[in-house]
Length: 276
Image 1: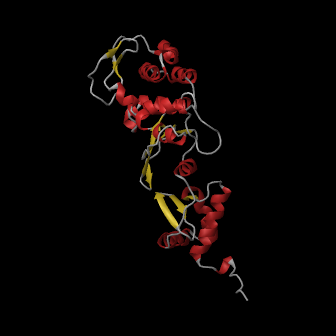
Image 2: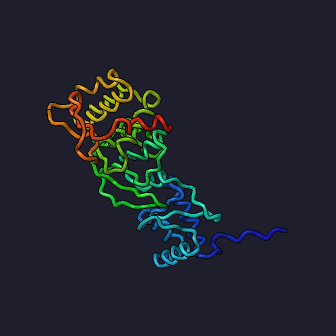
Image 3: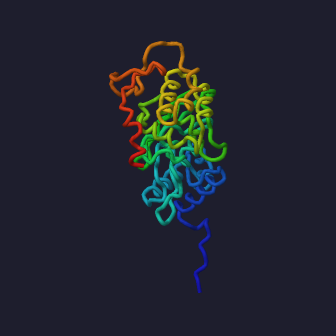
């Protein structure tokens, strides 16, 4: 005959704390994520004091039942040692809205790149510290709320639409997506995920002549002059030739049509078609 279950009130302090944190995280809709700034009062109600709560947290950490992500942020670990949470879910649980995951990680989510981008760019209107998890670095880029647009879906993690992610890659090469990788993303995106018209509308809202020029050149190279036509009106009035890649040397032929210095070999921008 099976032994009767031990009442929760008679179980060790750390086990009672684990149950309390689990219930609190579920009630908040972010299980298995623990946010001590929000959860510690519920924990204190179970343990009886802040000191006992701290003791329980230390014991849970030693037992491997609580895994630290950063200061004040933890994950509850199942008895098997697993944590049922993706990085994007973790970002969603700890980042105030509005926010937007963009650039390389957004491209990967839409299968527009086969690369794993270890730097995850998150646009936010709050001043937040960067953090890392299992080799990935979460970097927060501060923008005003009105500039955080292009959300794919209102439910779940806030991921940028392909158009927005591509524009951010062209505007911010320091975010880790090369011009060749961006070209591949444009090639994969049209016509399956987006269209030249939608890209042009997004570029108009983005309000960057440099980005519009680079996108127009890539669309023309990949899909022909007609596909790139809507971008011509957004190229700006400056006659200065900007580099196609902001991270490469400023050498190469010019493109008067787009006002660009083609400082990347066009064959390198088409190489994915040969190996894909």
